[in-house]
Image (cartoon, rainbow, N blue to C red; front, side, top):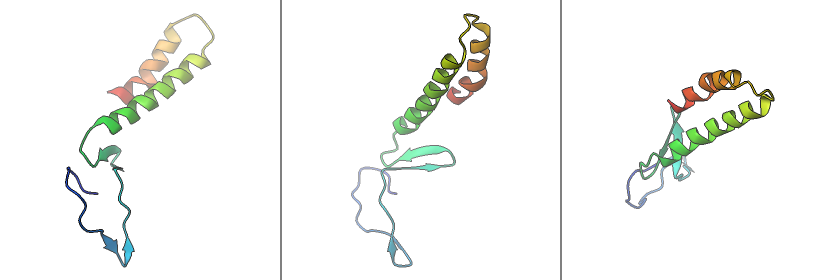
Length: 81
């Protein structure tokens, strides 16, 4: 993966097999895009947090808000921090 606005001049090979050109990749849990923009990583985090928050809302039928709030703090907020 190259970073920046430059064009890819050469294609890289490993033992004769060409490596695919991708626009982003995940390394150590962080999504790095070819333009070094954090938007893909942020979108991934927000998507996962939104999924978990919706699951919490669907699981609790009671009108008592303390349990859903505690589960949000436990399961969703750590993703966003």
